Length: 319
Image (cartoon, rainbow, N blue to C red; front, side, top):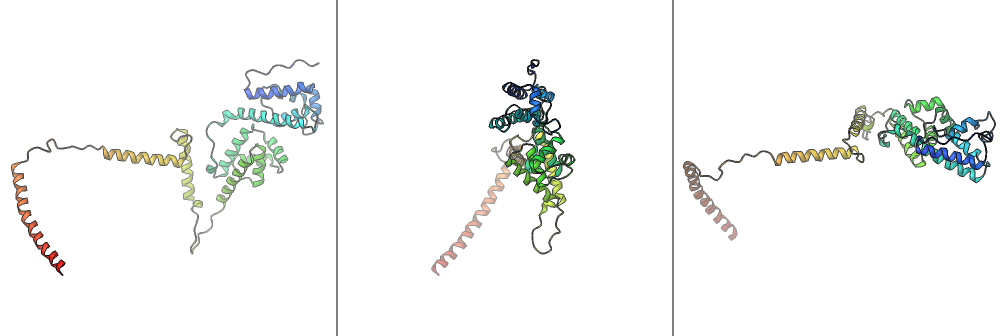
């Protein structure tokens, strides 16, 4: 009879405690010791073998165990090949993923790059690193094994270069990495489109055509520099809170233009206007005399003009 199992540490994260409690429940339902569970994982030198101490550490709840260990634990807690084993693996995978996201949350502070903002292999490496953290930050050896199981093996050195942003992954490498990081199929299609866009941008620009045609300006170094400056400006304004969380950079620019226009309109509308102190006061006698003389001279001229125009119109009517 083995010694009694210590309770799960109450200071552990809630989702990690839930995973440890589920693993302990599987052991109790199987009525087996950790040594028996270890023997069920396979031969000693096989890749799927897990020792008794490894399985015991996984159910202790002090740290997040690797996903392969959790799945081996779930398989060893029942008859192999049964439907109940598949259900236990699915439940263990779901609890492990929740605990991995809980563990990665402090490292995911801030807002990640949007798909349209990923324009270089370096930014793609940053986005893949965030996906790796959300997947529990598996080691490069675990990534190599997971990609091999996914159908396209990505060596540890290659995965390191891709996540560091040094090289652009191929379509097969990216698909294997996304599957290893437990990314959905729909999101995988979006990331493949991002990779295609980066690959197109890395191609040398075609020489401009002399006769007609349209030359894409996106490959121009000046345009690329402008886009990079916009990305840096957007990142700074988001960190300082100038851009709302649910607002795009284009919406922020439109809001700033409207604000500037309104400020200009208000300044023009409420600008200082100095009205004469006595605009309706009495005028000087000399000014009234000058105005009366102008009216006396202008009225005869206006009457003479009217008399010259009127007969002409009458003659035109007779004609």
